[in-house]
Length: 210
Image (cartoon, rainbow, N blue to C red; front, side, top):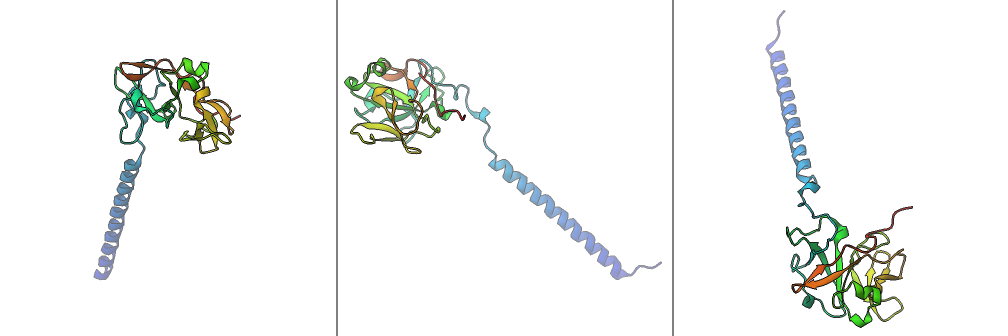
């Protein structure tokens, strides 16, 4: 049986085209795999040990954002009457900043000690008080320092659903749907810096779904 030259050439061309398609498929697969690896989230294990632990007695407070992020907060950094600074706790022994959990962010504000109720004054440091920066309603960050709804005092406000908290009264809810006050963080002044005196008082974060 004879096979024409034309048929042999055609078959060789077919084999060549198949090989090209295979090479292209392998290349695209490799590129797709590389893209997935490049965009994969960083593992939580990359956070240094202790970064997700709640504030502990003896922790320092450092600025959490802006140009001064990471700087230790001193009483003189806080203006009387606000606005508050946002802060993270920092382990004084390891220098690890506990920013591995958003539930660790703190609002720190200096108020007139005479304006604080007895319970609030007990965990304040010369009028400086600390509270969780996470709203007790839906877990949004509490970001505003504004006039109280229907009042003349400045208060913390979560702009997600308009919950307002009065830091002079233990961050009790004075407006909005939040079911409870913000967790308080007792503070002291030591070595010229603000230091955590005890763990959070109260539950941190949003209410649990029923």
